[in-house]
Image (cartoon, rainbow, N blue to C red; front, side):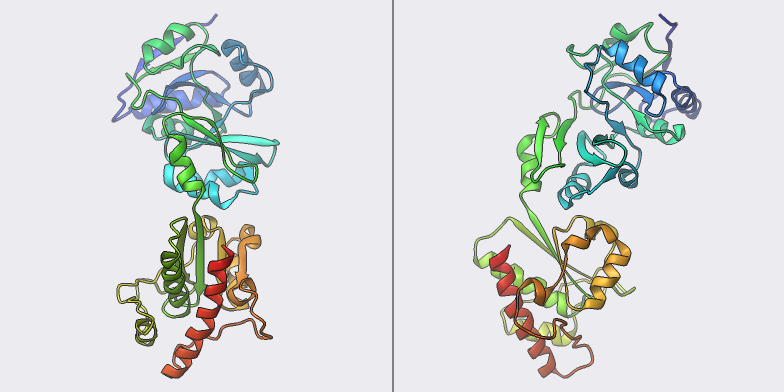
Length: 353
């Protein structure tokens, strides 16, 4: 038994001295009860084997059931996980920070569970520790997870070194746990996020078209595929477009608007966006117009290599030249020819996805 130090902390404006105190204790291998938005947890230094062994003992945790890592920013996922699928990024962008634990393939473990909590105290403590932090619920295994401080300290008083009392947790329900290490997303535990919400995200494909400036070729492809999918009654595909140039926020070129109007499509409200790691990561299929685009994308995010294809290549068009040339600066007739090629390819894509 130890003497548990209890501190009351403001859940809306947490005092920095208490954040630092908790962070320092965790970094040194001590066990600290902290709030999250779901339930109270016991924070420990994942890299400290003594602290983890002690944590398992006081929770009476079954062997072979690892603790999940809690992080303060999304970028840290890539420090610990590998082979991250597009669906995982979609779930992260939709539900993080929040009550979702995701099981990934691990870099140093076969698998690793990671969560980005939506609680200011928890995230600030993690940030100040500068060590990897696990934070399982503050209860004996098999007993209900504590949704307020009184429940947590009742079970853990004398077993942990420090405990922060921030009142009741905001959600009061444990995180949902999903496994993305297989060919499909598995919901291992339904918690604050319902299973059908997870499945809605998981079942939707994202197709991203990329060209140079996102003002002509990728705009054509996006608009044509959206039209075809709508005609086919498909609602399970999200279609995006982006460009590799520095400029963003411009509209579709005048000639692009003109040729698309002949197809009954109005893109006058299109606003270009620049390719970035986020949009690449959450795209299941990335279709580019030229080999150069593929090279530049892989320079930005080499991990998406297996998702990037030349549009003509993916569509299996029998053509010796797989590049689709940029029509910018060319006459309207060139735009019309470009449109015809892209339309043929898009029809094939619609049938394949």
